[in-house]
Picture 1 (tube, helix red, strand yellow):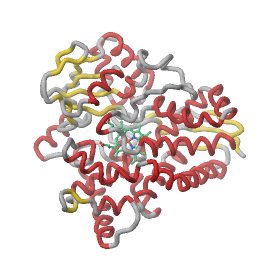
Picture 2 (tube, rainbow, N blue to C red):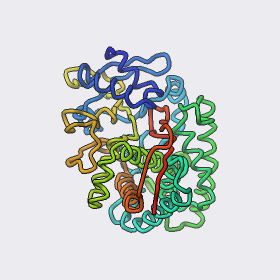
Picture 3 (cartoon, rainbow, N blue to C red):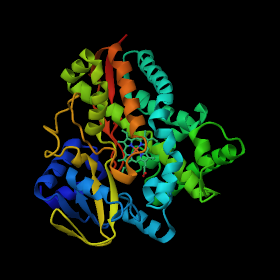
Picture 4 (tube, protein in one colour):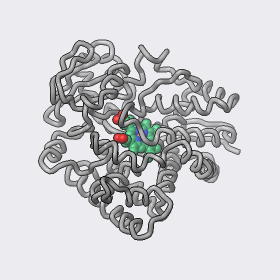
Length: 411
Ligand code: HEM
């Protein structure tokens, strides 16, 4: 494989569904050309692939030079052209830069601080028990992704938003369509028209929530967003709805992918499962190792506002850079034996949550959910095995396993 061939894997959704192929390409790039120009035209516009941990950090630290806008993530050239002509379909936090980004981020920030996390712990523990009980009800065999992993984090985040349980299935479907658009198993979200239809459905649903929470504010995150102010004025419709969308979507698929990939890693590494059984205090480091191992967010992008030299490579003003989190999290210069799943790994300076101004708002919540789930599951698990072939989502953005057939014995 040449660096050019390896670089194209970064823009190939199917490569992300085949971990070995992806990591062979990323390992080659880290070694031979860590800042590599990739040109996947005509489907995608070109970009610099940034594959080393230190370089991803260097870019993310300099939010004044490397902006999220106008190309915050790898979208098709068709979608880039549509956004350039008509504006972005959504203006979520990841689409924005300062000063607006800082002001909007502050609106929800308190809901993700340690104090709020302590308040939420009980609810998260309760939901973890509910889904571990569900595994018992399923009688010793299930598709862990479909039956457990996609539901639990969605329930946590929608509880935080304060939305009724009866609406959860609808949001689950919309989330999967937004994030799984490149995978042929998802029905919509494949073409630009379908993506617009999905976003329109989201708008319709959340418009109703905004109207309701403005009229009857309650003590939940949806009310905080609906009544959030910038310069003494309520957020406009686009900013409000984009806010719900980023919280509902970012808070869900990422964590479910982590929990499913984490369970798969425990099946493949029974010694690590035994370590966790023997020493429950490893649940915290194990959660972080699962997040590093899965790295459910595959990339975000930045655009250079001026010429810049990165690892001896000349980046020109206006160039796009793709930050490859899966690559940074297997960087041999940072992680000892990076392809070993180690539930006791310390330090574990992974970049799965990004870094800097856009550092994942829900990082503490994601850690808490992952830890709570495995702390509840493992003491009740007597046996665990694969019952079929695991399958991953074909996507360049957010994903992980979409099927994990398992067989187990539980108390
Ligand atoms: C942003 C990863 C869970 C909400 C991000 C970013 C990454 C990420 C890589 C962009 C960071 C950057 O550009 O430097 C993850 C992973 C998760 C996870 C790996 C689970 C394991 C969550 C949860 C929430 C959440 C549970 C809850 C709402 C957000 C929000 C942003 C964000 C709102 C945008 C922040 C901004 O642009 O200022 N996340 N996330 N994420 N995440 Fe997460």
